[in-house]
Each structure stands twice: as structure tokens, then as C-alpha cells.
Amino acid sequence: MHHPRLTLALTALLLGAAACASSQPHDTHRDAPAASASPEPPVSERTACTGLTVGPGTYAWTVKHEGRTRTYRVHVPPGYDATRPAPAVLAFHGFGSNELKMETLTGLSTLADTEGFVAVYPRALSPAEISGTGTQDSPRSWNAGGCCFPARGVVDDVGFVDALLADLDARVCVDPHRTYAMGFSNGGYFTYRLACERANRFAAVAPVSGPENVSPCTPSRPVPVLHFHGTDDDLIHYAGGNNLGRYGEVYPGAEETVRRWAKRNGCGDTAVQTYQQGDSTCTAYTGCTPQSATASLCTVQGGKHAWPGYPTFNNGTLNLDATREAWRFFKERARP
Image (cartoon, rainbow, N blue to C red; front, side):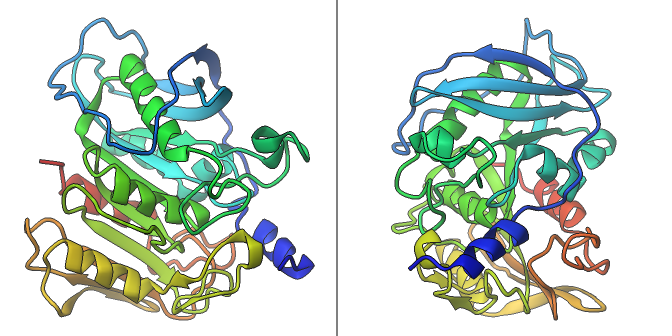
């Protein structure tokens, strides 16, 4: 049932940071065929690149999918070599947010400059773009399985990511064995959907404040997971809940989500502590098959619906930097 306070909370809490990235993008467009959410498309075994002309910089690119123009932002770091495959991290914004705010919230482009990976920020569709109602500024959402309306059950966002990656591969020398996904809230939900349905491309995932709510979830290989969540998250509850009304279904808690992935990845039954500072503790299920396919949970005691390491949005803790920890996790885990 629709509730005005819920709508306000969803819009306010999922927006991410209010500031936008400062660089002005170059805008070009390229068509690609629509793609189905299944089966998984084949992945090229790229070891080198030739003929690519894109250099370091920040770009806004578009691709056609399901008859719609879809947008994504790309930051190519200094030192990028167009002949050598580079790692890539896709960062999915929350409900009501966009790619510019996600770039600011995560600080991912700044980290990309020092670590040498390509940062990619896809943009979800608004209700106006989905059904022709509302405005272009209406809250954007991802079809992440159990969340979130209005994209849920309607938009093939997994197919959009397929089209995005095909377009990206034609422009930038990306390593298909070192492509990763992270996301916030609804974007975190969607990151898990990609782990379930596109395990052949994404080497590891790191959702923040968004559980796995995909049925069925049958990844084609074990996918390493690093999940971040605050115990006082009043929107996407740490213990799970049924509070989203028409925006989403009943969802599991953070601990249950990570346990599911530990079981899928053949890990042991007991999690061990891997990090502790102030209000933040991380644990990991180890002994997985393969060993690198750990399922980890970073818990912020008293943490709200926030991005750890970004304190100006909803009091994100300074005891844990989700962006840096996610990259540390990613760079040790290439896809076989």
C-alpha cells in the first residue's frame, strides 16, 4: 500500500550525496541490440586491445536498449593504456539518485586515478522514461528482483548492463576477468542480481545497504561478496523486513544474505573477524571453493542508511571506507 511518509523516506534517503561531479563529460551515442536477462552472453577472453582511441578523461555515453536511450558515465584514469586491459568497477546508484551523485558519494573516480581502474556509473530509468508518466526528474530505480518500483518486473536492466558492457568494450580496453560491481541501496540490490545472473562477467561484488532478493539466484560460478550495512538502517533494515510497500517485497537481512552466498560458494559454516575499528566490524566466511570466493559482511553498529566513509550523507562512519575496502577486496579476486 502506498504511504506518503514512505515515499518521502525513499526519495530522501536513497538520493545519495547532493553534490555532482565537477568535470564536464563528452557526450556521444551508439546503438546496441536489446538483451535478455538470460542466458548469460558470451564473454571475450581479451588479453590485448588494438584500434581503441579513447584516452583518460570523463565521458557521458549512451546506448540503445529496449527502444530507450540509456546513459552511463565513465571515468578513465590517467596512465590508462588503450592497448592493455584495465580493471573496471561499475557503481550503481540508489533509488531516486543518479550517476553523478553516485560518483560523489563513493569517491570512486578519485580512487580510480591512483589505482588505475576504469570507474563506470550507469543511470537507471525514471517513471517518465519507463511509462511516459511523471517527469524526467522523478525517482529513478533499478529492476533488482524484489526491489524497486517502478522498474521492478518491467525494465530489463540486466540486459541494459549487457549492452553497456558491449559498448564499453568497443571503446575502452577493459579486462573481462577484472570487472566488478558495487551499489547503494536499490543499486546494492541490483548488484546482487548481477552476481546471480552475470557471474560469468563480474568477478566480485560489494553491495552497500541492499540485500540479495532474487528468486531464483543460480550463479554460474561462485562469486565473492563483500556486503556493508548499518544496524540502525531505518529504510533497508539490517535484520530484513517488509516495510517497502509497493516499492518492494519482503527482503532478507544482511547476515542472512551473506550466509546464502557463503553456502553457494562452498564456504565454511563459521565467519571469522577480519576487521575492527570503532563502530565497524567485518567478518568473512572462508574455506570456500575456490578459496577466494569469500562471503564477507561489514557491520556498522548504529550505522544508518549511509555509505561508510562518506560522513556528510546520513552520518556515514569514518571508521570504515566502503569504497577503499571494496577495491582492496576486488583487486585480489580476478574471475577465473
